[in-house]
Length: 167
Image (cartoon, rainbow, N blue to C red; front, side, top):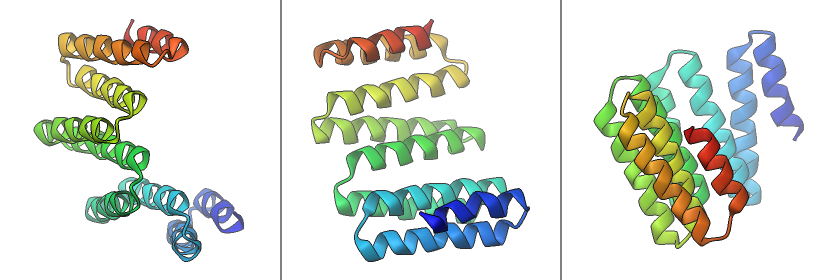
């Protein structure tokens, strides 16, 4: 935990390379102790840091490493979060088709895992992306579909949140 706390402090001091090194140390510790969630979180943080530093290639490498780690560990939620992150990044770069493909893949991960809530989260994130791309009708359709899945699992709070976000 101490290593992870060093990263934001280094960033505040504009010591980007030191911050990245601290996060890389966290990743290493996660690997050593077999904590996939810690490793994934560190890789996601590294990806965002590389993006912020303007290094798209290293950001993409970190995303690929996260996906490989999640797939190897059977971490469907981590894989879905990473695909969402990747899709947002691709849309930001103007790669709309690739972004929507990543979102469709995220939904498939939820379906394969048999996790309706995870699938619903993918649909919600996909709706946000469609809205950002100016596809309002598709965003609304995806929101309704997510609400239907949340209703199936009895997540009334999630369903209400979904409706609120779609309003």
